[in-house]
Image (tube, rainbow, N blue to C red):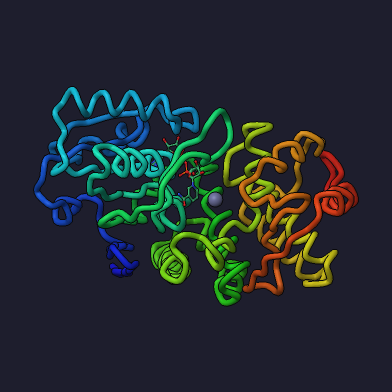
Length: 349
Ligand SMILES: NC(=O)c1ccc[n+]([C@@H]2O[C@H](COP(=O)([O-])OP(=O)(O)OC[C@H]3O[C@@H](n4cnc5c(N)ncnc54)[C@H](O)[C@@H]3O)[C@@H](O)[C@H]2O)c1
Ligand SMILES: [Zn+2]
């Protein structure tokens, strides 16, 4: 087990990589407990949950909304949950984003923690304190930054994940490698079979590297005024793909990263070989590299992106494998480049 600390000006979060979720009781503060989970996670692990007021949501993005949050506020009031209570989210990114949002807003904020149950949430979603919900299909439009007390990342829980969900977690792992850690990129190339098979040591090492890298970025820039923006590599496109087609986050990020790498090449930042290396790695992890639809609707969504600034948009690009840069690109130029890089259903990017 490895404990990684995330220290910010007003909080200190313990992230326990390799801890068994069955030991969660050791980390709970002994206050009245509320558990928020989803039906799938409950089916696999509910028998081991500690005593709590249990709130179970339906799996999927449609539960990460203000209306579901509002229903849950009602349940908390009906059960006389007060400021001394503790909220534990047990689930993937959707449960963690929602549970963290509810804990951060109900009664102006309760303490909370996570048992993070998907690869995507262990390496990314449950780390860093971004809690929020979608608004009318726009991803993560309403939210707050506030750190949990602890996050348990138990790699054993990943064995029950549907294969596709497991692969999608590697989208965020590859993102971390591409923008922050060239050694991790090498490791993912070299040990891809072990990683895909869920070999215990390899998995724990990969999760620890990603958690540690993300913690260092969040410590430097919790409110996302600079460095932290780099974690959005591939995500400006991804959010637009998700809005338009409902494709899952990990797949959307994979395609978005290849596109962002292609634009990095257009700007002369990285070579064609680097773009190919990224695309090959994404392929190895059974993730898509090409957006199978037209781009016009995607552009409409991107115009409303949080990172848009007048006629241009801030994009996270690669300076080399393992290092990201942020560049403002005019929307018109971007559209031309994407038209050039993208052929629907093809493999051009
Ligand atoms: N807050 C952040 O910083 C941040 C970062 C990245 C992603 N996200 C968000 O995370 C969300 C995606 O998270 P996700 O990919 O974890 O999806 P998810 O929470 O929907 O989980 C994926 C599926 O796996 C099931 N599941 C979860 N754990 C399981 C287990 N151990 N065994 C069997 N089934 C299990 C779930 O019920 C669900 O059907 C998106 O909404 C995205 O926006 C947030
Ligand atoms: Zn993501």
